[in-house]
Length: 112
Image (cartoon, one colour):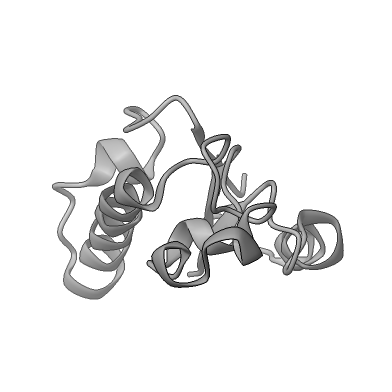
């Protein structure tokens, strides 16, 4: 099983050039993709405080999901996915199966 976490507005590792082609090639039903519709490349790091304006078009401005919002969401999806596939823990099933959501900016995709 694969868990992909992507940012729709990532200009470094684009949806069209990387994320979607990889996702489309996956087979099986256990894969999950968590997409941040307002996520950029730097949404998933803490580097915006270091590089400032250099990353403003790729996650480091107010139009993107802020890292302090994204990080706990990313952690929750990882915990639910790893819990299920490594430990048989279904306590995060509602999240990893798309029954619940943690943020309006986040879409969970499943292979059917």
